[in-house]
Length: 478
Image 1: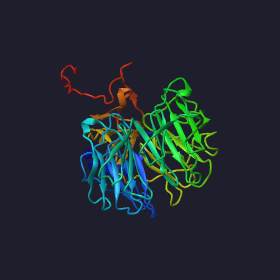
Image 2 (image 1 turned 180 degrees about the horizontal axis):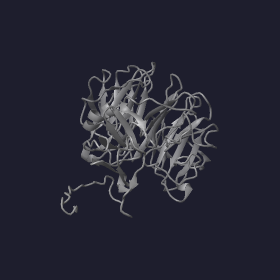
Image 3 (image 1 turned 90 degrees about the horizontal axis):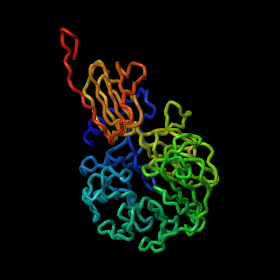
Image 4 (image 1 turned 90 degrees about the vertical axis):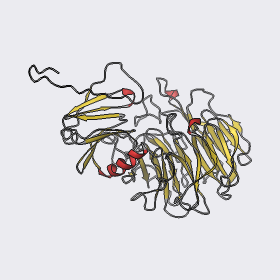
Protein backbone atom coordinates (compact mmCIF):
# COMPACT_ATOMS: atom_id res chain seq x y z
CA UNK A 1 0.00 0.00 0.00
CA UNK A 2 2.87 2.41 0.79
CA UNK A 3 4.30 1.95 -2.71
CA UNK A 4 0.91 2.62 -4.28
CA UNK A 5 0.33 5.80 -2.35
CA UNK A 6 3.73 7.21 -3.27
CA UNK A 7 3.54 6.21 -6.93
CA UNK A 8 -0.11 7.20 -7.34
CA UNK A 9 -0.98 9.40 -4.38
CA UNK A 10 1.79 11.92 -4.91
CA UNK A 11 0.70 12.39 -8.53
CA UNK A 12 -2.99 12.13 -7.85
CA UNK A 13 -3.74 14.41 -4.96
CA UNK A 14 -2.77 17.82 -6.46
CA UNK A 15 -5.16 17.14 -9.37
CA UNK A 16 -8.25 16.51 -7.20
CA UNK A 17 -9.76 19.80 -8.27
CA UNK A 18 -13.35 18.74 -9.06
CA UNK A 19 -15.42 17.29 -6.22
CA UNK A 20 -18.73 15.48 -6.32
CA UNK A 21 -18.18 13.45 -3.14
CA UNK A 22 -19.03 14.75 0.31
CA UNK A 23 -15.72 14.62 2.15
CA UNK A 24 -12.80 15.39 -0.12
CA UNK A 25 -9.34 15.05 1.38
CA UNK A 26 -5.85 13.72 0.81
CA UNK A 27 -5.33 11.16 3.60
CA UNK A 28 -5.02 10.73 7.33
CA UNK A 29 -2.82 12.76 9.68
CA UNK A 30 -2.10 11.07 13.02
CA UNK A 31 0.08 13.66 14.75
CA UNK A 32 1.60 17.15 14.52
CA UNK A 33 4.75 18.64 16.11
CA UNK A 34 6.17 22.17 15.98
CA UNK A 35 9.66 23.67 15.86
CA UNK A 36 10.36 25.43 19.18
CA UNK A 37 11.48 28.75 17.67
CA UNK A 38 10.65 29.03 13.94
CA UNK A 39 7.62 28.43 11.70
CA UNK A 40 8.43 24.84 10.83
CA UNK A 41 6.36 21.81 11.70
CA UNK A 42 6.05 18.11 11.02
CA UNK A 43 3.14 15.69 10.54
CA UNK A 44 2.99 11.93 10.92
CA UNK A 45 0.72 9.67 8.89
CA UNK A 46 -0.45 6.06 9.31
CA UNK A 47 1.00 4.82 6.03
CA UNK A 48 2.89 7.71 4.44
CA UNK A 49 5.61 8.41 7.00
CA UNK A 50 6.88 11.74 8.34
CA UNK A 51 6.60 15.04 6.43
CA UNK A 52 8.01 18.52 7.07
CA UNK A 53 6.90 21.99 5.98
CA UNK A 54 8.67 25.33 6.37
CA UNK A 55 5.99 27.43 4.63
CA UNK A 56 2.78 26.49 6.47
CA UNK A 57 1.88 23.66 4.14
CA UNK A 58 2.48 25.27 0.75
CA UNK A 59 5.10 22.59 0.16
CA UNK A 60 5.99 19.40 2.03
CA UNK A 61 9.14 17.29 2.22
CA UNK A 62 8.92 13.55 3.00
CA UNK A 63 11.57 12.50 5.53
CA UNK A 64 11.14 8.74 5.88
CA UNK A 65 10.74 7.37 2.36
CA UNK A 66 14.07 5.55 2.64
CA UNK A 67 13.74 4.55 6.28
CA UNK A 68 11.93 1.22 6.52
CA UNK A 69 9.03 -0.62 4.95
CA UNK A 70 6.89 0.34 7.94
CA UNK A 71 5.93 3.94 7.18
CA UNK A 72 3.38 4.54 9.92
CA UNK A 73 4.07 7.42 12.33
CA UNK A 74 1.88 7.87 15.41
CA UNK A 75 3.80 10.54 17.34
CA UNK A 76 6.70 12.97 16.96
CA UNK A 77 9.06 14.57 19.51
CA UNK A 78 11.43 17.42 18.62
CA UNK A 79 14.45 18.07 20.83
CA UNK A 80 13.88 21.60 22.25
CA UNK A 81 17.63 22.34 22.15
CA UNK A 82 18.39 20.89 18.71
CA UNK A 83 15.62 20.52 16.15
CA UNK A 84 17.77 18.19 14.03
CA UNK A 85 17.14 15.57 16.72
CA UNK A 86 13.73 14.05 16.11
CA UNK A 87 12.06 10.94 17.53
CA UNK A 88 9.20 9.18 15.76
CA UNK A 89 6.91 6.47 17.07
CA UNK A 90 6.38 3.96 14.30
CA UNK A 91 3.12 2.26 13.36
CA UNK A 92 -0.50 3.34 13.44
CA UNK A 93 -1.73 3.60 17.01
CA UNK A 94 -5.28 4.55 16.05
CA UNK A 95 -6.59 1.28 14.60
CA UNK A 96 -6.41 -2.27 15.91
CA UNK A 97 -5.84 -3.64 12.41
CA UNK A 98 -3.42 -0.93 11.27
CA UNK A 99 0.35 -1.10 10.92
CA UNK A 100 1.84 -2.21 14.26
CA UNK A 101 4.76 -0.39 15.84
CA UNK A 102 8.31 -1.65 15.46
CA UNK A 103 9.58 0.83 18.05
CA UNK A 104 10.95 4.36 18.31
CA UNK A 105 13.33 5.73 15.67
CA UNK A 106 15.67 8.72 15.95
CA UNK A 107 17.45 11.11 13.62
CA UNK A 108 20.25 13.50 14.58
CA UNK A 109 20.49 15.21 11.18
CA UNK A 110 16.96 16.46 10.56
CA UNK A 111 15.72 13.27 8.93
CA UNK A 112 18.50 12.59 6.41
CA UNK A 113 19.20 9.28 8.17
CA UNK A 114 17.43 7.34 10.90
CA UNK A 115 18.37 4.75 13.47
CA UNK A 116 16.34 2.62 15.83
CA UNK A 117 16.50 3.43 19.52
CA UNK A 118 16.66 0.80 22.24
CA UNK A 119 12.91 0.20 22.03
CA UNK A 120 12.17 -2.35 19.30
CA UNK A 121 9.22 -4.66 18.68
CA UNK A 122 8.46 -7.21 16.00
CA UNK A 123 5.37 -6.60 13.90
CA UNK A 124 4.01 -9.95 15.07
CA UNK A 125 3.75 -8.52 18.61
CA UNK A 126 1.07 -6.09 17.34
CA UNK A 127 2.11 -3.31 19.73
CA UNK A 128 0.25 -0.01 19.40
CA UNK A 129 2.53 2.89 20.35
CA UNK A 130 0.64 6.17 20.58
CA UNK A 131 2.42 9.20 22.03
CA UNK A 132 5.95 10.25 22.92
CA UNK A 133 6.97 13.18 25.14
CA UNK A 134 10.40 14.79 25.45
CA UNK A 135 11.33 16.58 28.66
CA UNK A 136 11.27 20.37 28.05
CA UNK A 137 14.57 21.08 29.87
CA UNK A 138 16.27 17.66 29.99
CA UNK A 139 15.86 16.31 26.43
CA UNK A 140 17.57 13.02 27.23
CA UNK A 141 14.40 12.07 29.15
CA UNK A 142 11.61 10.56 27.04
CA UNK A 143 8.25 9.03 27.92
CA UNK A 144 6.05 6.88 25.69
CA UNK A 145 2.53 5.48 26.04
CA UNK A 146 1.64 2.24 24.27
CA UNK A 147 -0.75 -0.69 24.37
CA UNK A 148 1.80 -2.42 26.62
CA UNK A 149 2.18 0.47 29.06
CA UNK A 150 4.24 3.57 29.85
CA UNK A 151 7.94 3.45 28.95
CA UNK A 152 10.69 5.84 30.04
CA UNK A 153 14.20 6.54 28.75
CA UNK A 154 16.75 8.70 30.59
CA UNK A 155 19.52 8.41 27.98
CA UNK A 156 18.00 9.82 24.79
CA UNK A 157 16.40 6.55 23.77
CA UNK A 158 19.39 4.26 24.22
CA UNK A 159 17.49 2.14 26.75
CA UNK A 160 13.88 2.08 27.90
CA UNK A 161 12.16 0.81 31.05
CA UNK A 162 8.48 -0.15 31.36
CA UNK A 163 7.17 1.90 34.30
CA UNK A 164 3.44 1.09 34.22
CA UNK A 165 1.66 -1.76 32.46
CA UNK A 166 -1.63 -1.18 30.65
CA UNK A 167 -3.21 -0.03 27.40
CA UNK A 168 -2.45 3.72 27.47
CA UNK A 169 -3.56 6.40 25.01
CA UNK A 170 -2.41 9.84 26.18
CA UNK A 171 0.24 11.52 28.34
CA UNK A 172 1.08 15.15 29.27
CA UNK A 173 3.57 17.06 31.40
CA UNK A 174 2.24 19.54 33.92
CA UNK A 175 3.14 22.94 32.38
CA UNK A 176 6.15 24.41 34.16
CA UNK A 177 6.59 21.34 36.40
CA UNK A 178 7.73 18.42 34.22
CA UNK A 179 8.35 16.14 37.18
CA UNK A 180 4.54 15.88 37.35
CA UNK A 181 2.84 13.95 34.56
CA UNK A 182 -0.65 12.82 33.67
CA UNK A 183 -1.62 9.76 31.64
CA UNK A 184 -4.77 7.85 30.76
CA UNK A 185 -5.72 4.45 29.50
CA UNK A 186 -9.07 3.36 28.10
CA UNK A 187 -10.95 4.06 31.33
CA UNK A 188 -8.74 5.64 34.03
CA UNK A 189 -6.63 8.71 34.78
CA UNK A 190 -3.16 8.47 36.35
CA UNK A 191 -0.72 10.95 37.88
CA UNK A 192 3.01 10.78 38.55
CA UNK A 193 4.90 13.01 40.97
CA UNK A 194 8.38 11.66 40.22
CA UNK A 195 8.89 12.14 36.53
CA UNK A 196 7.04 9.00 35.48
CA UNK A 197 8.81 6.55 37.76
CA UNK A 198 5.63 5.64 39.62
CA UNK A 199 1.97 6.21 38.85
CA UNK A 200 -1.15 6.65 41.01
CA UNK A 201 -4.71 6.27 39.77
CA UNK A 202 -6.97 9.27 40.45
CA UNK A 203 -10.71 8.64 40.56
CA UNK A 204 -12.19 11.51 42.60
CA UNK A 205 -14.98 13.05 40.50
CA UNK A 206 -14.43 10.82 37.47
CA UNK A 207 -17.04 8.42 36.04
CA UNK A 208 -17.07 4.82 37.17
CA UNK A 209 -18.71 3.66 33.93
CA UNK A 210 -17.24 0.64 32.17
CA UNK A 211 -18.49 1.92 28.79
CA UNK A 212 -15.67 4.36 28.13
CA UNK A 213 -13.58 3.57 25.07
CA UNK A 214 -10.98 6.30 25.26
CA UNK A 215 -9.84 9.32 27.28
CA UNK A 216 -7.81 12.35 26.18
CA UNK A 217 -6.00 14.97 28.28
CA UNK A 218 -5.39 18.71 27.79
CA UNK A 219 -3.33 21.13 29.88
CA UNK A 220 -2.57 24.82 29.46
CA UNK A 221 0.38 27.03 30.50
CA UNK A 222 -1.94 29.91 31.41
CA UNK A 223 -3.14 27.87 34.41
CA UNK A 224 -0.83 24.94 35.16
CA UNK A 225 -3.16 23.61 37.85
CA UNK A 226 -5.90 22.89 35.30
CA UNK A 227 -6.36 19.51 33.66
CA UNK A 228 -9.13 18.77 31.16
CA UNK A 229 -10.27 15.22 30.48
CA UNK A 230 -12.73 14.16 27.77
CA UNK A 231 -14.27 10.69 28.04
CA UNK A 232 -15.77 9.01 24.98
CA UNK A 233 -17.88 5.90 24.68
CA UNK A 234 -19.52 3.75 22.00
CA UNK A 235 -22.30 4.76 19.68
CA UNK A 236 -25.76 3.63 20.67
CA UNK A 237 -29.31 4.57 21.63
CA UNK A 238 -28.28 5.84 25.08
CA UNK A 239 -26.75 9.32 24.53
CA UNK A 240 -24.84 8.96 27.80
CA UNK A 241 -22.75 6.29 26.10
CA UNK A 242 -21.58 8.56 23.25
CA UNK A 243 -20.11 11.57 25.01
CA UNK A 244 -19.64 10.35 28.56
CA UNK A 245 -18.36 13.71 29.72
CA UNK A 246 -15.96 16.62 29.93
CA UNK A 247 -14.18 16.85 33.28
CA UNK A 248 -11.98 19.58 34.72
CA UNK A 249 -9.47 19.57 37.54
CA UNK A 250 -8.21 22.73 39.23
CA UNK A 251 -5.76 20.95 41.53
CA UNK A 252 -3.38 19.19 39.14
CA UNK A 253 -5.54 16.14 38.59
CA UNK A 254 -6.14 15.18 42.21
CA UNK A 255 -9.90 15.58 41.73
CA UNK A 256 -12.26 16.48 38.91
CA UNK A 257 -15.60 18.18 38.40
CA UNK A 258 -18.04 17.16 35.68
CA UNK A 259 -18.53 20.02 33.23
CA UNK A 260 -20.98 18.52 30.72
CA UNK A 261 -22.37 15.34 29.19
CA UNK A 262 -24.39 16.96 26.37
CA UNK A 263 -24.79 17.66 23.53
CA UNK A 264 -23.09 14.72 21.86
CA UNK A 265 -19.92 16.48 20.72
CA UNK A 266 -18.48 13.22 19.40
CA UNK A 267 -21.20 12.58 16.80
CA UNK A 268 -21.93 13.58 13.20
CA UNK A 269 -24.52 16.32 13.65
CA UNK A 270 -23.66 19.98 14.19
CA UNK A 271 -26.28 20.28 16.93
CA UNK A 272 -25.12 17.12 18.71
CA UNK A 273 -28.47 15.29 18.62
CA UNK A 274 -27.32 12.02 17.06
CA UNK A 275 -26.19 8.87 18.90
CA UNK A 276 -22.92 8.27 17.04
CA UNK A 277 -19.34 8.15 18.31
CA UNK A 278 -15.95 6.96 17.12
CA UNK A 279 -14.14 7.37 20.41
CA UNK A 280 -12.22 4.12 20.01
CA UNK A 281 -10.78 5.41 16.73
CA UNK A 282 -10.30 9.14 17.27
CA UNK A 283 -10.71 11.68 20.02
CA UNK A 284 -8.68 14.85 20.61
CA UNK A 285 -8.70 17.85 22.94
CA UNK A 286 -6.88 21.16 23.36
CA UNK A 287 -6.94 24.01 25.88
CA UNK A 288 -6.05 27.52 24.70
CA UNK A 289 -2.62 28.88 25.60
CA UNK A 290 -3.85 32.49 25.87
CA UNK A 291 -7.60 32.49 26.61
CA UNK A 292 -8.82 31.10 29.91
CA UNK A 293 -11.62 28.49 29.77
CA UNK A 294 -11.38 28.10 25.97
CA UNK A 295 -11.24 24.40 25.09
CA UNK A 296 -11.92 22.37 21.96
CA UNK A 297 -12.74 18.71 21.40
CA UNK A 298 -12.44 16.79 18.16
CA UNK A 299 -14.32 13.63 17.28
CA UNK A 300 -16.03 13.63 13.92
CA UNK A 301 -16.31 17.44 14.05
CA UNK A 302 -14.53 20.09 16.15
CA UNK A 303 -16.48 21.69 18.99
CA UNK A 304 -15.39 24.70 21.07
CA UNK A 305 -16.41 25.88 24.53
CA UNK A 306 -15.62 29.27 26.06
CA UNK A 307 -16.64 28.30 29.60
CA UNK A 308 -14.34 25.34 30.27
CA UNK A 309 -16.69 22.78 28.76
CA UNK A 310 -19.87 23.72 30.59
CA UNK A 311 -21.64 24.53 27.29
CA UNK A 312 -20.87 23.88 23.62
CA UNK A 313 -23.42 25.54 21.31
CA UNK A 314 -22.96 24.01 17.85
CA UNK A 315 -19.86 22.51 16.29
CA UNK A 316 -17.30 24.81 14.69
CA UNK A 317 -16.68 22.42 11.79
CA UNK A 318 -18.80 20.10 9.66
CA UNK A 319 -17.62 16.97 7.89
CA UNK A 320 -19.95 17.19 4.83
CA UNK A 321 -18.05 19.40 2.41
CA UNK A 322 -20.92 20.52 0.19
CA UNK A 323 -23.09 21.38 3.23
CA UNK A 324 -20.53 23.04 5.49
CA UNK A 325 -20.70 26.82 5.98
CA UNK A 326 -17.83 28.78 4.47
CA UNK A 327 -14.61 28.18 6.36
CA UNK A 328 -16.06 25.37 8.45
CA UNK A 329 -15.33 22.30 6.33
CA UNK A 330 -12.87 20.04 8.11
CA UNK A 331 -12.67 16.42 7.06
CA UNK A 332 -14.25 13.93 9.46
CA UNK A 333 -12.38 12.07 12.19
CA UNK A 334 -10.11 14.30 14.25
CA UNK A 335 -6.97 12.51 15.41
CA UNK A 336 -5.00 15.51 16.65
CA UNK A 337 -5.77 19.01 17.93
CA UNK A 338 -2.66 21.07 18.58
CA UNK A 339 -1.64 24.69 19.15
CA UNK A 340 1.49 26.20 17.63
CA UNK A 341 2.97 28.11 20.60
CA UNK A 342 4.73 30.57 18.26
CA UNK A 343 1.51 32.12 16.91
CA UNK A 344 -1.37 30.39 18.74
CA UNK A 345 -2.69 28.94 15.50
CA UNK A 346 -4.79 25.80 15.95
CA UNK A 347 -4.17 22.68 13.87
CA UNK A 348 -6.38 19.65 13.31
CA UNK A 349 -5.06 16.35 11.99
CA UNK A 350 -7.90 14.45 10.31
CA UNK A 351 -8.65 11.52 8.04
CA UNK A 352 -8.53 13.98 5.14
CA UNK A 353 -5.38 15.92 5.97
CA UNK A 354 -4.32 18.86 8.12
CA UNK A 355 -6.37 22.02 8.66
CA UNK A 356 -5.48 25.19 10.57
CA UNK A 357 -7.32 28.06 12.20
CA UNK A 358 -6.12 31.55 13.08
CA UNK A 359 -9.45 32.37 14.76
CA UNK A 360 -9.57 30.00 17.73
CA UNK A 361 -11.44 27.40 15.73
CA UNK A 362 -14.09 29.65 14.17
CA UNK A 363 -12.81 29.18 10.60
CA UNK A 364 -10.45 26.64 9.05
CA UNK A 365 -8.29 26.13 5.95
CA UNK A 366 -6.72 22.99 4.48
CA UNK A 367 -2.95 22.98 3.92
CA UNK A 368 -2.36 19.45 2.65
CA UNK A 369 -2.97 19.62 -1.11
CA UNK A 370 0.65 18.70 -1.89
CA UNK A 371 0.88 15.71 0.46
CA UNK A 372 1.02 12.28 -1.19
CA UNK A 373 -0.37 10.31 1.74
CA UNK A 374 -3.63 8.85 0.48
CA UNK A 375 -4.16 5.30 1.73
CA UNK A 376 -5.19 3.42 -1.39
CA UNK A 377 -6.99 0.12 -1.07
CA UNK A 378 -7.59 -0.74 -4.72
CA UNK A 379 -6.82 0.62 -8.20
CA UNK A 380 -9.05 -0.11 -11.19
CA UNK A 381 -7.85 -0.79 -14.68
CA UNK A 382 -8.23 2.08 -17.09
CA UNK A 383 -11.57 2.18 -18.89
CA UNK A 384 -11.95 5.03 -21.39
CA UNK A 385 -15.74 4.77 -21.56
CA UNK A 386 -16.02 4.98 -17.77
CA UNK A 387 -13.72 7.96 -17.62
CA UNK A 388 -10.25 6.54 -17.08
CA UNK A 389 -9.11 4.81 -13.90
CA UNK A 390 -10.23 4.94 -10.28
CA UNK A 391 -8.85 4.33 -6.82
CA UNK A 392 -10.60 3.38 -3.60
CA UNK A 393 -9.18 5.01 -0.48
CA UNK A 394 -9.44 5.04 3.30
CA UNK A 395 -12.07 7.63 4.24
CA UNK A 396 -11.38 9.71 1.15
CA UNK A 397 -13.75 7.84 -1.10
CA UNK A 398 -13.57 6.86 -4.74
CA UNK A 399 -11.47 9.11 -6.93
CA UNK A 400 -11.44 9.07 -10.74
CA UNK A 401 -8.65 10.16 -13.04
CA UNK A 402 -8.55 10.73 -16.81
CA UNK A 403 -5.99 12.84 -18.62
CA UNK A 404 -5.29 15.95 -16.56
CA UNK A 405 -8.67 15.91 -14.82
CA UNK A 406 -9.31 14.14 -11.53
CA UNK A 407 -12.35 14.06 -9.35
CA UNK A 408 -13.50 12.98 -5.92
CA UNK A 409 -16.64 11.12 -7.03
CA UNK A 410 -17.77 9.37 -3.81
CA UNK A 411 -17.07 9.97 -0.14
CA UNK A 412 -16.31 7.83 2.92
CA UNK A 413 -14.32 4.60 2.70
CA UNK A 414 -13.97 2.94 -0.68
CA UNK A 415 -12.42 -0.47 -0.32
CA UNK A 416 -12.88 -1.90 -3.80
CA UNK A 417 -13.31 -0.23 -7.18
CA UNK A 418 -13.69 -1.59 -10.70
CA UNK A 419 -14.29 0.04 -14.09
CA UNK A 420 -15.30 -1.92 -17.16
CA UNK A 421 -17.16 -1.11 -20.41
CA UNK A 422 -18.50 2.20 -19.14
CA UNK A 423 -19.62 0.88 -15.75
CA UNK A 424 -17.94 1.84 -12.46
CA UNK A 425 -18.45 -0.22 -9.31
CA UNK A 426 -17.43 0.90 -5.82
CA UNK A 427 -17.82 -0.90 -2.48
CA UNK A 428 -17.28 0.75 0.88
CA UNK A 429 -16.23 -0.78 4.21
CA UNK A 430 -17.82 -4.09 5.19
CA UNK A 431 -19.77 -4.05 1.95
CA UNK A 432 -22.37 -1.86 3.66
CA UNK A 433 -22.89 -0.19 0.29
CA UNK A 434 -21.99 -1.42 -3.18
CA UNK A 435 -22.63 1.14 -5.91
CA UNK A 436 -22.82 1.03 -9.68
CA UNK A 437 -22.50 3.97 -12.04
CA UNK A 438 -23.23 3.57 -15.74
CA UNK A 439 -21.50 6.22 -17.77
CA UNK A 440 -18.76 8.62 -16.81
CA UNK A 441 -19.02 9.82 -13.18
CA UNK A 442 -16.37 12.45 -13.81
CA UNK A 443 -18.23 14.31 -16.56
CA UNK A 444 -21.75 13.07 -15.84
CA UNK A 445 -24.14 13.74 -12.95
CA UNK A 446 -23.33 12.39 -9.49
CA UNK A 447 -25.87 9.56 -9.54
CA UNK A 448 -25.01 6.10 -8.26
CA UNK A 449 -27.26 3.07 -7.78
CA UNK A 450 -26.87 0.94 -4.65
CA UNK A 451 -26.75 -2.73 -5.69
CA UNK A 452 -25.84 -4.24 -2.33
CA UNK A 453 -27.70 -7.52 -1.64
CA UNK A 454 -30.21 -7.02 1.18
CA UNK A 455 -28.86 -7.73 4.68
CA UNK A 456 -25.56 -8.83 3.24
CA UNK A 457 -22.67 -7.30 5.19
CA UNK A 458 -19.15 -8.69 5.24
CA UNK A 459 -15.55 -8.07 6.24
CA UNK A 460 -13.80 -4.71 6.18
CA UNK A 461 -12.72 -5.17 2.54
CA UNK A 462 -15.29 -6.83 0.30
CA UNK A 463 -13.77 -8.17 -2.95
CA UNK A 464 -15.67 -7.53 -6.17
CA UNK A 465 -15.16 -10.39 -8.61
CA UNK A 466 -16.09 -10.06 -12.28
CA UNK A 467 -16.49 -12.92 -14.74
CA UNK A 468 -16.05 -12.35 -18.44
CA UNK A 469 -19.29 -13.17 -20.24
CA UNK A 470 -19.49 -13.55 -24.02
CA UNK A 471 -22.75 -12.73 -25.77
CA UNK A 472 -23.95 -15.28 -28.36
CA UNK A 473 -24.05 -13.51 -31.77
CA UNK A 474 -27.12 -15.54 -32.79
CA UNK A 475 -29.46 -15.43 -29.79
CA UNK A 476 -27.99 -12.53 -27.84
CA UNK A 477 -27.73 -14.51 -24.58
CA UNK A 478 -24.64 -14.45 -22.38
